[in-house]
Image 1 (cartoon, rainbow, N blue to C red):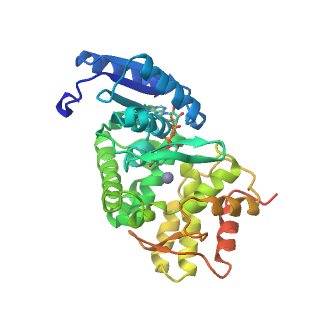
Image 2: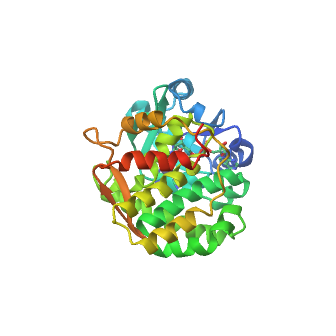
Image 3: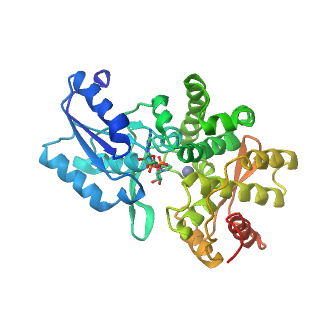
Amino acid sequence: MKALWLTGRICVVTDANVLPRWGWPAVESLRAAGFEVTAVELPAGEASKTLQRAEALYGHLIANHFGRHDAVVPVGGGVIGDLAGFVAATYHRGMALVHVPTTLLAQVDSSIGGKVAIDHPLGKNLIGAFYAPHLVLCDVAALETLPARDRWSGLAEVVKGALIADSELFLRLENELEQLGNGTLSQADWVEVIGRAVRIKVDIVSEDEEEDGRRVVLNFGHTLGHALEAAAGYGPLTHGEAIVIGMRTAVEVSLRLHLCPPADASRAQALLARFPAPPPVPPPDAAVVRAALARDKKGVGGNVRFVILSGLGKADVVPSLEGGLLEFAVEHARSQLGASP
Ligand SMILES: NC(=O)c1ccc[n+]([C@@H]2O[C@H](COP(=O)([O-])OP(=O)(O)OC[C@H]3O[C@@H](n4cnc5c(N)ncnc54)[C@H](O)[C@@H]3O)[C@@H](O)[C@H]2O)c1
Ligand SMILES: [Zn+2]
């Protein structure tokens, strides 16, 4: 960190699960390196990504006389990274930010791309900014303590990256999905897989930092995934479980539009079918899913832009789903949550 000319003080932000395992070791090693460090612990989970928690964190920084040249270091998953990143982006109009992601999802997705956000009671991630971190320090050892369900959740993002942009990674996932999900691969294997997934996101984001064009393909599986998460009320499904459902539906839609070779669609579906089934969740009402889709902030001019698979490692965007395809997609996604009530 000193090599980055970070010479000021550091506020480590972490959650109750991560603090004893990775938070304290991070604080101790920063202190041993000569930094003055304070630590803030938040309750684990999405419920912490609020304006109230952000305000408390601003309060801690003010009370401890933090300035623009001091750093915030989130040590945790996407929740901690998004919230502490948002505070770093806005406190004194921006202070140093070093992400230390400890979930697979945060390592391959949320710590990259410069999006930081908090939730509003009316919707998730509605208040945020684009704010690039000064550094992302990713240690795959952190994954050893990650619960299996969170590991599979992050793996869904790795599969998404492979499907939209990396057919070689797709092949590797075809061979090793269960070992990755069950956490039985070596750290060296993880470094390769995560490195590859990171490269996919970095390449796409660096072409389109503010999400006007190419970056939309990262939303593969997310249009319906987000709508299901919102309609089911955040909590019953992990983000990964929701986007696996969304990706299966997106592949089906791509086939119906004759935009994806059937052999590629079959291989994509076969890989997605190997994810563990989510816990039973009553399917939300179709109207509620449609309303959540309509609220999707990535829609343009009221249409639901939809990312389709055009082959293994290739994705494209269609401006809207016509001719009953939107209704088909909503039903296809809902049907994966179990029988209709
Ligand atoms: N900014 C972005 O571009 C972006 C992208 C994708 C997702 N996100 C956001 O990320 C969040 C989800 O992130 P997440 O899945 O990492 O959730 P999370 O931060 O809630 O972490 C999941 C769980 O794992 C625990 N945990 C974290 N690291 C651990 C470890 N090493 N060992 C044991 N337990 C550990 C946490 O305490 C938590 O209970 C959502 O809020 C989502 O909106 C942001
Ligand atoms: Zn995602």
